[in-house]
Length: 540
Figure 1: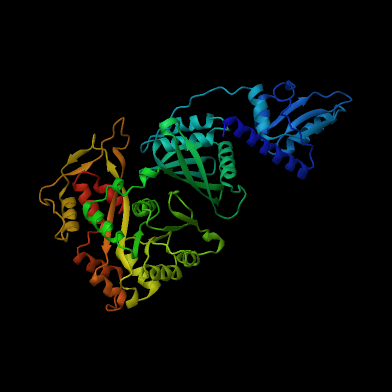
Figure 2 (figure 1 turned 180 degrees about the horizontal axis):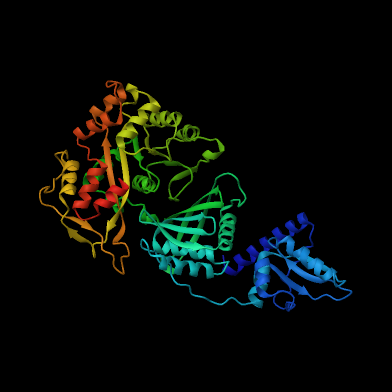
């Protein structure tokens, strides 16, 4: 459809909505489309700043016998309307207010006070203790036009590759922070009036309330960039009331279908072989565990994409749907309304799927339903909250109990973290001190036979070097995985052959069966110069 027609339809919709609102408010409605290109605004009544701030325009100058006429919007403060009425009443004159649409107001103001095309400086992330950069970015954000400030922040976050934007209320100001490569960085401190503009835009686009007294979740999309770089940005919004106002976290999902490719995750050959082996079978359960932001969803979607062939029916249950994948039936589950994954799972199993992805297993009912599905000919993929694979296995036994029937259901448990990757162009090797060397030797002393052991007597580690092109010395993130393959020995815990199902006992058995722990994988990555020991300790 041609862009002009789309704009006309949007305008018509805005006018109809304004007309309905006018009837509810008991204010006369005015469609200014016939006159918006010719009407000259009455000067010297309100200054331009006041018109912009209060969303009001003077239409016709009054006389002793005719009223002063103003176009107002739903955002015009009632206090100003009373103030104007009192002012003209004192001069024995009247005022008349007409409700006009937000689009009509913008068209009139753009003609009367054409916006200056301003190119704002790109946001830079400050290093620790660098208050000068924060002051500079704060100044930029405080100067960006009201209609642009929210879009500017989102565009800049996307440019920086941020995964989250945090908008936090403090006593006298608003703090903006962004999470880049898993680390949270302060970006700017904003005035309170900027906060109201940003929050208003965010709430209206994500269908949230700025006056809510309970936490809220919302979702919105935005087209970013031009030409070949144009892409859809999915945003998940979480808002919560705090002491000084609503705090918001915007999670950014840069939706690009090519990213959901298991080959692009740079999973190690051993881990990849185990994943391929498990998902090539028509039944069983694969569990992904790890904290929020550890890349669980991306890995699961990549597995789903690898399974997405014409001869398979794949159904996902998600709260909310994070990526749209063609060829897959995706079912949104709103658990805030009291519904559970278990109820929906029982329903979708009647549709005879080959593969089911359950967004998260949170309770015993969902766990048992998913397990039963996995032993009756379905491949079930799901996420689960636990720190590592052994803790997840132990907690799953708590949910479903020890049961011989369930012993062959779970086939693979994957714990995952994302760590920042060193910038290869600037990283620097160094000789660690003796205590660090001893710690590394201790971590790697029980590596399984199949893993190539590094030289633990003479080794170097690496550290980041800050450069102009690499402000933190890191570039992107990499996956660290721990995989618990459910062997005959591990099945004994589910069957009830072993009474002690504590995570430590399961972990010890898994390591004896060849499992490499998260910490061991991380330290091996540090020895290979891919990341740092400090980063491994921060994340793992």
